[in-house]
Length: 245
Image (cartoon, rainbow, N blue to C red; front, top):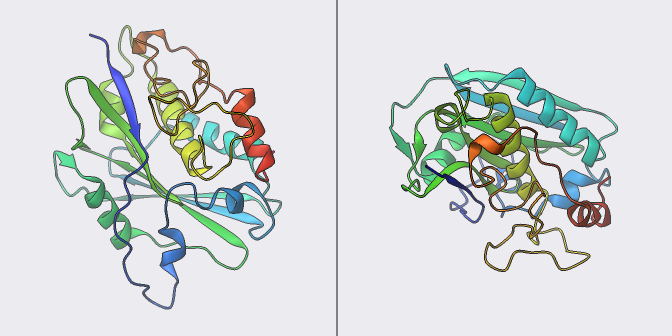
């Protein structure tokens, strides 16, 4: 069976009120709207990634290392990038809506932007997306300007078996793809230098070999994956023009 794996990027849960004298609203804006702040060092000199996972669903260290390498190669943060990992208990649901995921973030997130540090929320959940269908399986979603979720249970179901990619490879691909949307790709807050948005798949690159191609996780069959896709020259040009490397 061929699996076409989608990555939803347009979900935008309503913004809650600021609490505890922290302007949480700055971390709850539309996906891609903070692309320049993340890519450049004009305002934020460092980054903290709050990597939270449901107990038993921790991503592989290889995938985390690949994600940090992806960040290091694309963004300017002279004071460094820090990853803080911790586990939380499951809610015990079989499926999660994006509003469910956003509510978990509201309850659990500890790190928000400061004057010189930008904060990212990366959540690895059990359960599956409530948008899954027989034809389309959601592996990850970037839903706010500094927030994304990875459906780790689904990734495990589709990896580490014959004719399937390794778990670390699939994790790395989905993490980097979703963060590409947070970086404003494609045409999602980072202006295109050359037209290359897929007209049939909004906010995805039309170059099939690119990380931001809509079906980059499937390649018709998951068994065809053997390396993590890279950003193509057009996407790289967009990021560089918006303050990135």
